[in-house]
Length: 113
Length: 110
Image (tube, rainbow over all chains, first blue to last red; front, side, top):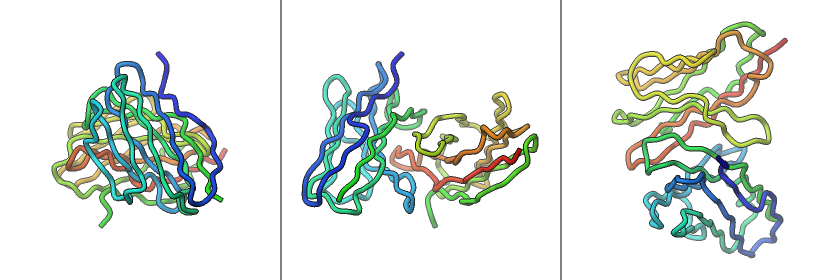
C-alpha cells in the first residue's frame, strides 16, 4: 500500500509570491491534515480536510488556505509569501476524522528568499 | 499553559538503558494519545498509540497513560543508538485537533 505522497519535495520562492503544495493520502484515507514545522515552533496544525470540507483550522493567517478533492487529494496554498513561511510542510492522512492515528508524508521543504 | 508539553531535552542515556520520555496535556477530555519518532531531516513516524489508562507494550516500547494526572509517557527498553531521534507526543484535543508537543531529543550513547 502506497504511503502519503507530497509534491514537490523542495521549493524555493521569492517573498510576495504564492505557492501550492500537493498531498495524496494513503488509499482509503479520507482525512488530510496539514502541519508547518519550524525549529522554533515545532509542529503547528494548519487545517484538516475531510470529505472535501475543512473541519478544523489552526491559528494561521488567511494567507494559508487549502482544499480537498473528491479523490481525497489535498492542496495547500500560501499567498504573499513571507520569509517566516520558510518551513517544512507536512501532510498527514487518517482513515477518518479525529481520534485516530495519522500517517505523515515526507514533507515539502519551502524556502522563501 | 501549552496544550501539549514535553521536556525538550536532550535526554542522554547509555546504550542498553531505559529511556523515559514524558508528556502532559491540557484537555482533561482527551481520549487519544500518540507517540511519534522523527529522525533528523525525516518526517514523523507513528510508533505507539494509547487510548486507555495503564500500560501498552509493543516490543521495546511501552506507553503509559494516566488521564487523571493528564500525563502520558513512553519507555524505551534496551535503548540503542538507532533510537536517537526526536520523540513527539501528540494528543487529540477538543475539536478533534491532533496537537503535537515540541518534542524531546533522545541521544543514546554507545
